[in-house]
Length: 117
Image (cartoon, rainbow, N blue to C red; front, side, top):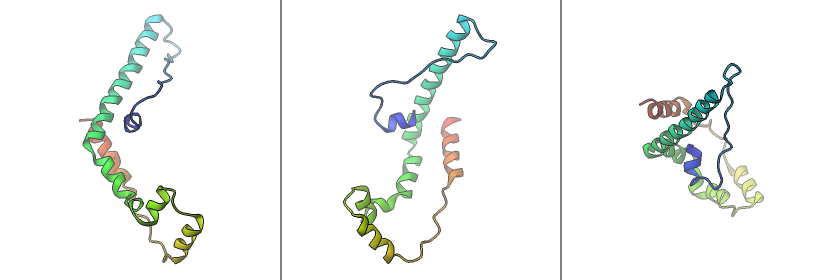
């Protein structure tokens, strides 16, 4: 639901159906399974909106990919460079540094903080 909201919503719909467990075979079981599924989508929508309003994930992504806001990174993103220019740039670079931490634990903490508050 987070990705649905971030991309501006749906242009179609969801492929949604209910899969009951083997011992759950009555119409009532199927009815409850569909309700549970739709309730899960609704809660996902609410929590996705809270994640977006919180802003920490967006700030993290903006910071992580800040090199694509200027210079060769922006030219790559804008598709205004050539493979030759990228090659020349890479040849002029010094030995690359180790990439920064992916900070997965931080991102999981942000997600948990919003989901379970």
